[in-house]
Image: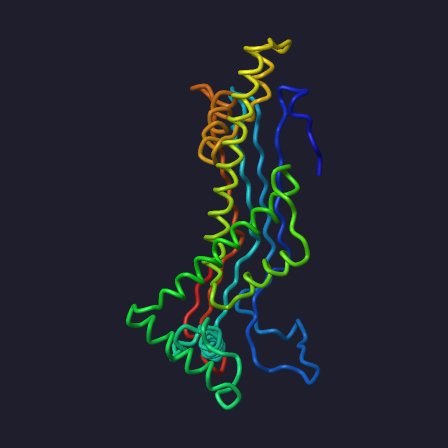
Amino acid sequence: VKFVDRQATHDAFLHKELLISGFGIYLQEDMTSEGTTNLEDNQYVLSPLSFEAKFRESDVAKCIEYPKYLIHSKLQSLSIKLSRTQLELSHRLASVVTPSTKIRPLFPEYRPLVPVSENAQEWWNYAFRCVGRLNRRRSWMEFYLAFQKRKKYLQLYKRHAYSEETSWLNGLNEFELSDLRRIEGDRSVGISGLMLWRSIADSEYEKEKQRREESSIVKRSILSNIFGSSTSKEKECDDIPITLSADELSELEGFTLDADQRLTEDSKYCDITFVLGSFQVHLLKSEHEPISSLDM
């Protein structure tokens, strides 16, 4: 790999390369006693192949003798061979991997982890909560407990995530950290619920941070008006943190690229080359007799 200083020269190029060697897919059932097979005897659906791709980008805005982007890829051979036995085996594998469509328990986050014989009371509570969820009738106490759990988690998460970045948030002690882990491990709170709570906590932190920064700027301006200040307005403006959203950052990045890398009208934009040496498709019966084949 060669690294080029793109700022020191006007004719710099960015080079990237991708190499894939010996990639193949085989599907068979005849395994040895050790649980492995000889690679030479594998029944490949996709024969091992080698692929090469190269990419080059120019930094100049006027590309007359060469294109701005140059893409060259090469594939020596592509061979696909599928037998009836392999097709049936792939269907069996797909049926095992595919998620089951059988009846699942209602609201598994409420389902007890112990058998009915050990704790029947928990199973009665589970049935009561399921019926309430289905009928959209839930007790006010359940809503209140969920609200208290959410409120506590937001405060603990903000302190745990941002205590090292700010001075107005204290870190968690061992007891509070155990409470945070207990709420995160609560089966009644799903992953989507935790992610939503974290997003709310992040938003609250950003708003509080912005409010404190604005309050600090107002205090500095009042003190400077009363007692005077030796710092200039330009320095005060430089101290104010500037925060941009993801859309604003992408827009700014696109504007910079357009301003620096806009091609002239007589420039070459892109040159793409793809070379395929050979292409084969073979469909076989169970006895490996050909049904249909295609060679190019």
